Image (tube, rainbow, N blue to C red; front, top):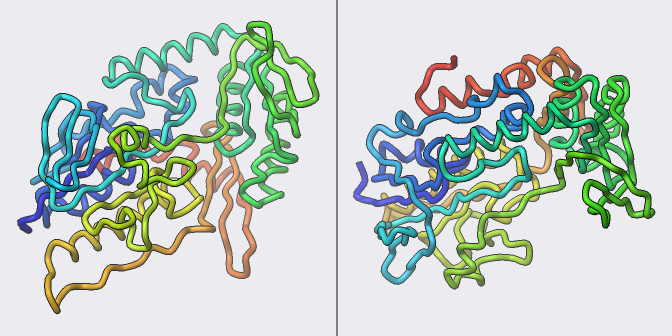
Length: 368
């Protein structure tokens, strides 16, 4: 084992992957404010269906054989003393520190509080509100908005569901018009009202929402699937605002190191390496950063290994479930085209299990 101490801040997809990759070659400490891994991919369904409530929560206790998981909140990185400071006063020495704090997602794809019990309570509240709602408004026609609208419709076939999107077509940011048409056809066939070119904001009265044309919609429940915010406010508060770009992402070089720092890496949704903030990109970054960290720790002088460079992912398979038994899969093919596959492929690849067995295996548990 290497003599190096690696502190990974954040136990999401990228942080877990990287910590596991380095477990046998460094002294790894994974820091997270949550007491379990949060499988966010399954969270939209968990926020709607009670039988999925606990599915997103996978314990960390089998992730590392040699390293450790510390429950806490990082508040600063002391680059002079090479220590990570936690909110409770704990100081963790490092030879390499990795920022993997991810991004904050809108409800219900959010871990409420810091314990499983608090998050379960939040999911239960969402489920109860959806069960009682007569009209649910979902704002945002990207993959999350489409998926959530489908989940709500299948759970509440008698309720009115409206999906409002500021763009001209559903899934327009994916670049696949065919996928957008398929999503719209499925939703409309299931009586979901689609409002395109409809930028929404809260109305003057409680429970009302206004579009860019001034038209009001009344709904007793709303969800906003309109993007994410990188979890980097703590870095700004700690005096590292110069590490961040205008959108709050950590600026990294091609080796995924924070600019100007050889021993500070940033991976996943938190960095500016790619505009495509999806799980496959985060995992690819974690793998490359793990290689570069091993090279940094285990080589010196004229024998030092050169780092590998990350190539931003611009085209990758994207799967959008319409509930557990249908959906659309976008598969890039040579020549810049995108193949659009239907329900059977989507169900097998993601829709039925939402990749839960895969993530359980990654954390050392059986698939069940």
